[in-house]
Length: 139
Image (tube, rainbow, N blue to C red; front, side):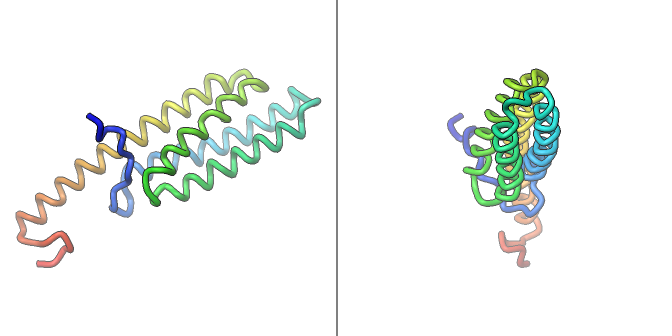
């Protein structure tokens, strides 16, 4: 089961892995931004740190969502970006739970989406072979 850790995305233009993961990251970026607004009021002495940390996390989440088609590494980066999201719980207690929920969603989406794309690619290959078409779609 060593291949279960391979997150290399499918070449299909709108694969489940990419769509689920990108959606999760973008929605998470909005949630982080709103958490920063809450932290702005809850921790007035740490506003500069809060805004820098929060906005860098938001920008990184959005940038990562756009890089998901570039190989497996953006998915691992997305997993690493779950850490600063969860750590916003230091200022906004609800983010411990919300951040953990987004982390679980992202990890599940990356791995389950990869599995779904792999299965769909295998079905497409069998259908094309049955039709006598090559992998290039020629026939």
